[in-house]
Image (cartoon, rainbow, N blue to C red; front, top):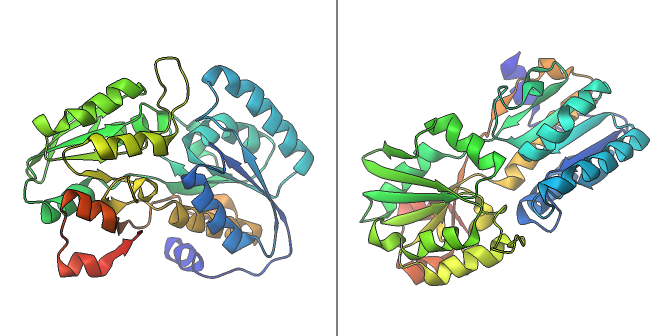
Length: 321
């Protein structure tokens, strides 16, 4: 059955028009959301009615979340969707149980937590894609790309998503070793601490690898746009900055890496939703992990940090500028 369902992911099921609600943890202007919105529309947009609702949890403070949740619950009650698609951990933690209590099937993606953090993952109305940064594959890849590769700084925001991702792989450890490279892991939501870590990274490390950096705030508790943060890091860092996510790679951002793709996550999530809309029960659709990563590189970043790829890696890479 598992192989059959996975095969069906690549088939576009035929079914009558139905109603889909997509609940975003963040907002449409955030590139991660924007990329998966395009993917979902490409699979479901022509056949079904789709409504996108934003929790906006990166820009809103946690004290503002309950009001936003109540507003979205009201919208869902009015829409009465045939399936709900939840993007990322915050949407799942804030909305999944409410949805299944209303007997609404749930498809998720971008969720880094486990049933310990998200008990609703075990509900029979829930299926989706467990997102996991490609820690091992990324380090193995960078050891092929870099001449100096003994120590790396993994730098992330201190969000629920990143805590779950790190804890799932490393447990409570914030120092580790993979393929002979030593790793230090820093999670912080403080802008000054985040940028200071980048500024001084060359004193201890051969490269920085960033996770998400989208819950970072300044000393006055103002939201710091992620593009602004990575842009400052680009100009201040004396060593290359790589990324676990393709949304942080580009001109005056990260140079590249083996990455998770928002578009791919959205594409797979929409295909899972298609199966449910076509009458397959959610508990017959296996939960899966991110299907594959891809190599993404910025040509301007490669020039900036003097990074050269082998012909084989270059032939497998997508270049964004």
